[in-house]
Image 1: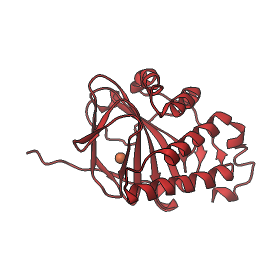
Image 2: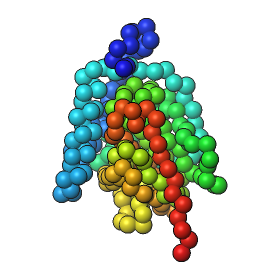
Image 3: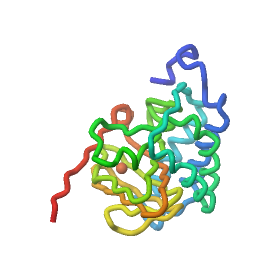
Image 4: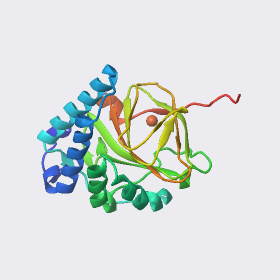
Length: 227
Ligand SMILES: [Fe+2]
């Protein structure tokens, strides 16, 4: 357990990095003040994220030093953050701007769909791998270039929510989600994301699951039958 590690294993704690502390507080506010749209399932997910996050904040979690890294899609990050400042999610967009040079962007799986390597990357900022170390909640960002289709996938034993911070996305061709919108994907729920043609889309995501599942999260791409 991370809590049992002594200070020599993790000499830095969250309190040493105020901008990262503010980042978590803004994520907390998003889950606190956004509407659940009358869905009890979404309300209980929001509550669970807040519960785990406030426990983390109270414990001043360890911070791992991680070398920042970019992917090609990061060329769209400035535009995504600029437009993200026009919406209710602006406080989060502003704090992401503060730490953007420290983020580690990755693809996360070895087999990349053709063409996706220029269109997509994610950056986990809290989870078992760090940089903010947590065993019970994963938080991160996903950035999509304009006109991206992220293939159908699901998450085994993990509840996922996406918060749209900028741009516009659709999931499973059902509805269009603008900044401030929240989508909940229960465990094993297949979902496919498409993004608008003109603007990049930045999403914040949360994964809730048991520590055993979060330490080695399983995601499966699902082959769609052509019609
Ligand atoms: Fe997902």
